[in-house]
Image 1 (cartoon, rainbow, N blue to C red):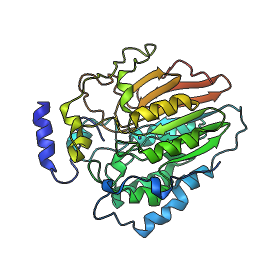
Image 2 (cartoon, helix red, strand yellow):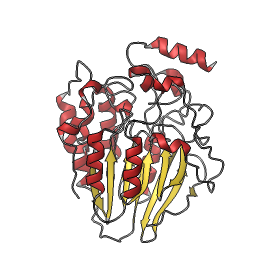
Image 3 (tube, one colour):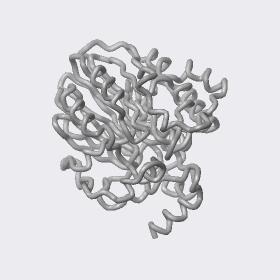
Image 4 (cartoon, helix red, strand yellow):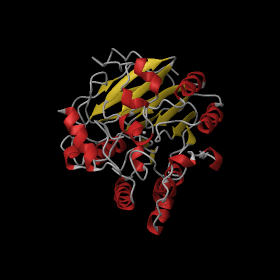
Length: 356
């Protein structure tokens, strides 16, 4: 049945933007210098043209505009922030069958804001496909409901195409830097672009610099790194299955099909692990996979939080079992991070504290 479904989906759009199997394939701002951006090979031959109205939206909803709204916090002062994962509704009717609710993203985001979070961070895939109409719809939602800052990283769906070669012109124009950091309450928050299922050498160099300051840090990125598949998940939150180390042969293919079957990034993964483990990072929040999963590894808390409102597809064996729409409410205290998982429908529960 699954193979038949995959064959049908590939036939729907063999040359353009086929849907992913099971998943929807995320103070001052420091942007990535032009030389360190994604390689030209990842760009489309015909780049997306940015309409004037979307270019103008950056002054209202872009990273700089949102960061300008952050409240002032002294180092050591307690505060909270929210994390919300993949929010796109699905590009095809069959995907929307698995939707938790059409309003799930807005409902959950409004709840985070009502909780008093200083800011909310969305982990990418905020649109189903990176075209002007989808971006316009999202900008309208942000302008209508942003009572407090909403920041984000870029997901693969936010590119011009979810899979294969794609450009990020709309994201760049509307939101600004893909790799950036900001400081708040004595913590450094870093957003890293993994939407091409890789982290480049230039990005890793940038990340080392971004983390080379005293104090605790948090990283937000869309696609999880390869090495977390072998990490034992937290037992305190119930039966959370570790990822299987076995890989499909499809994952070794190049180009479009490689993207189609890849749900974590391999290029740059070992280096990312070492940099994060040695850089004072306390937590890494990831999306891309529409489920919940958490683990501790080399002194760092890793959380997959892909339940921002996107379809909750069936997952194959070896993937996280917990599939539910949810957000994270993260309290930053002198004692460290206290993460509360807030299901869209259900009772909230806390993860073990993250020490400072």
